[in-house]
Length: 405
Image (tube, rainbow, N blue to C red; front, side):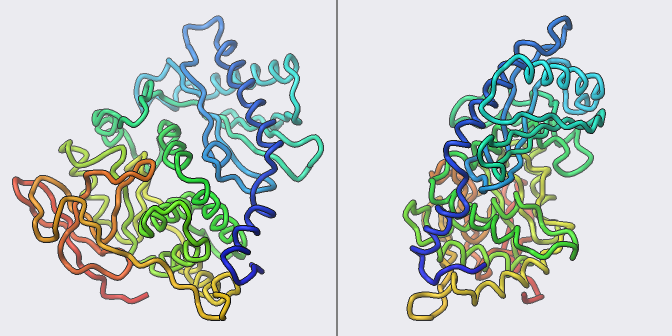
């Protein structure tokens, strides 16, 4: 990645080369609003099935899309699903109906962008794209996903009922298989963040997309997006941070992937016994762990070639973008223990304890959970193991790993 040596150059690079064209984004948003309204009003018109809501997800909804070709989801929540496990029912019929209405919308409405529906008639998948009429390298590819409305009508700044997660834990078989049900929470977790943090996410995604292809399954891009939010929280949640320092911190976290245990409690916590026991099991799994803040079954760490990504991260640390004006290496933000419940060593029972800097935030505000274990942490992130806590609850303690990165 051929970037200049200063933080100012990084900001300029993101603005000039990574941010999508604003006019195109406005056109896409207008087209998506039209499509969503059309689907709500016309799908299953002569059927007891009703469209409860249509939600846009993905990078364009979060405000982190890159210039060029980006991906997004359009999640259609339907009344015919009353639980998670029913989401696969009647999929072919549902996809067929949505396709028919998309084609009708394509014919009956006028769009400022080119609206193309995939001709590949897979009964389980439906895709369409929106492309600029004047900038043909600017497009967004959408996947249409039918889903169970597990969350209902979300209330701003409130978390879902714990029963939602109890039902999820009892229903899922594969990690993140019901992730579309939590699209609104996933979107809100990123979209509410400061503009400059979204720019850092774009930079990290750009770096990630430069990785050599065909060398194995790399970690999911969404995991890097969450890791970037985590790095910013560790840096103090400053809205006017140094872009070079932020990028360097993400590279350092990737380098030390064997120690990563990253999670948030903005949407679920340890108050419910079923959720608490499930989180305990999740946090005992091999590192790296990056739990989806909206869906605790979604662990974005395992089954990926983090070693390849770490190798590229180390190489990038000596690139011009990670060097200061005087040629010295840019230093990552220090990881600090943040005791959210008072002075160290004065922690009460009744909570799951997290390690170094596991700051849980929502729109940049610190939350009252987790508590910070007073044992000495690893330099970047704790290696944790569970032990019985007071009143039968679970505390998560530091246990530094044997293997060095």
